[in-house]
Image (spheres, rainbow, N blue to C red):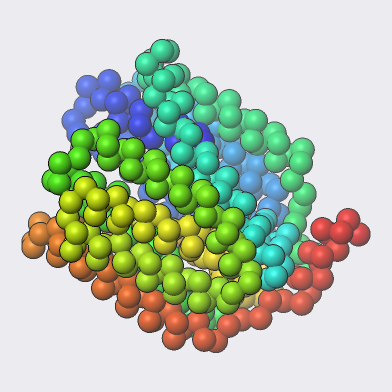
Length: 386
């Protein structure tokens, strides 16, 4: 994730050096997310069919190769293709990373384990932009891509040497999701997972990264001040993540996710009625609190409700796909509402959607899939070294 953060502030500037219009610059930026959207589910299925280690090693290697080639790209179309490759690798690594943590954990400690993973993601993507910006200034726009290639290669080698195969023994004799029936994919808890993931990531892209910075500028904050608030908000998330992981284990995860959605909804409401710099700061912190609360609980819940018979990879792939769909539609949707009405209309719509999602999720998640006892036994033996 530090690699992803290193690239994020530099990519549009690098794409412009090819002398192209803004639309093609946007394609270079969005290609990464587009690849993730279509690879999440196949990555989860491949983790069940071929093993976790192979997919996560390949994912890190593809991310390295895509970024190395991007730094050497001769034109914008090659850059776009390289971003697709890097996005596919990122999807494989992130999806299967969640699967491995789900494998190695039990329902009693899963939230805490997931909080470690989420915290590492957040730390990496937070540190990355600073590194990428300074490297671009000192060594040119291509240098961050080469750094990311090195970091990702190290990650791939580390996975090769240190990460065990965690696929349950029963799943190793069948194909991905071989024991998963179609009816289980429309099981109410999985539909509830879709609702939470989609609305949470929609809010992150549409409100937190789209509408709210525009309101910050409208109430007189400079770009530097807006960036400072966002950095502080990330610090709040990082500090709360371990606490949220413990809550996910000690409190019913359904309750924590509902609270997360309602806290998310409070952020837009605060900014609707308090449109000044302090309202911007408080709303941003509240949204960060909602993200921290839901961060460990959402993938933990996905693992909890995974269908028996090798469904962990499939469910994590679905979870990542729902989130990426929300992230892709959030900005255009709330932007369209703001154009049709105003900023308050977009914020009100987002808040209403989150409250509705909390109610729908609560109803859908009442029927909870029990973890597979065979899976738990296999993972307990692995952790204990038997």
